[in-house]
Length: 186
Image (cartoon, rainbow, N blue to C red):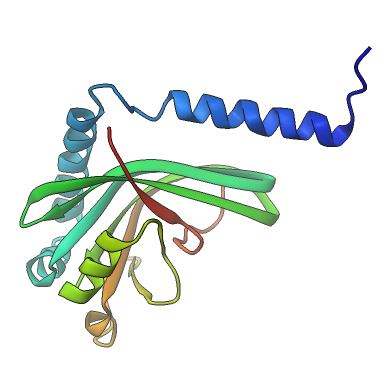
């Protein structure tokens, strides 16, 4: 007879969730074409709804586009999404974004985001890292009530500028803090 403890049950559940997530990650599938199509649609939406972001694109050395990040939490939370890094409008790598959190949280949401690398050094650091985490060095551009994206002049001097948009769901707030980006092979 097996003695199943709460800890064992929890670890089994986490392992099963990890296997399920791994099965749906697109590795070994036609994932690259799917990701590229979603990235194209996301950029089309971003630039048509928020034309001011075209200036960011023109000044950036590269963009990481995450078309869909899904987050959910009930005490413990997590999030996942896939996207592409583009340099000179060409996809050079594919990335996953994962996020885990613990704390007072309840709900689920989805959003898209684009990281604009404003310096060659920031882009190089991102590409050389085994797992880059968004942190304090990322400046955010936010949508105001007039549905325009605006950036403070000081933000435009930041090495990485994040634009979060297309939020839907019942979880309050979207941030990139704690998200880890890892290169994948779709």
